[in-house]
Amino acid sequence: MKYTTDFRDIKQFKPFSFRGMIRDFALTGLSVKAKLPRYKESFFKPRIQFLYIHHVFDDEISKFDNLLNELSKCHTFIPYSEAIRKITSNEIDKSYISISSDDGFKNNLKAAQVLEKYNAKACFFINPDSIGLTDFNKIKEFCSRNLNFPPTEFMNWSDVDKLLKLGHEIGSHTMGHINIATTDLNKVKDNISESFDVIQSRCGKVEHFAFPYGRFFHFNLPSYNYVFEAGFKSCATAERGCHISNEKINLDELLIRRDHVVCDWNLDHTM
Ligand SMILES: [Zn+2]
Image 1 (cartoon, rainbow, N blue to C red):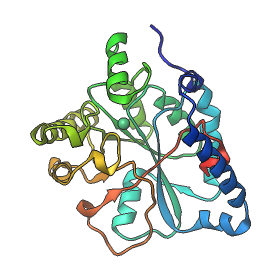
Image 2 (image 1 turned 90 degrees about the vertical axis):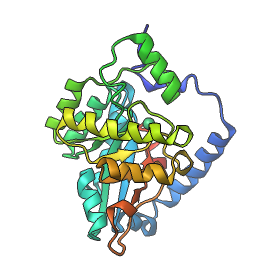
Image 3 (image 1 turned 90 degrees about the horizontal axis):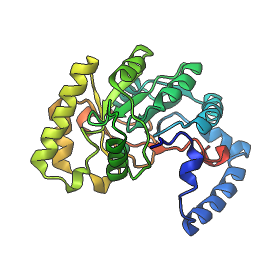
């Protein structure tokens, strides 16, 4: 009965992947190229890039710090709501980064400590069903069934309050991390609006939604409409990409693209 506290424990169990090796090799090549002045300039291109993490384990704290330090040299960190507002009002005048985190692990509090150093405010997408779980076996089951992850402690509601007091936002990631694409539509509708009600009553306010697993094929159009009917003002994916200046866009026509980052990755590769 032991929770995961270090990322190295997770890496140890990941099988060797040929695809991963090729990707590493390609990224090393790209990162050398990215050091050229011409490519460095692209970091300053006006855009909003949403980065999201899942965890900052003990052995990832200094790596997360290094990442934010590097990013702060050529970007301005903005809160999630501010980023959405800038996109919809077509005010993307600089290179901005907005950070979010999915799944509500307890180690997100460590992420918050590092974010504080850079005065960066994030949005934490949580599953109310896992918040406050204390039974090890239930946590183990939730992590394994829904997150494909070893048993890792979740935040409780007073941890969520701490994040709010620090100025972060709380968003919904559905009640229990369901795969929307394979769930009955009536259940999806209830699940999305229940998560809105629970988080709003616990946190006073909730505006943003990120659907679990995050690829377009994990989602569908009716569910997209339920998100806005429930009262959310934005809907995020885990599809890579950034947002650039555009014609004015309505909130309910906007799917947020986010880039996944693992703090443990080689910093040059991430950049
Ligand atoms: Zn998730």
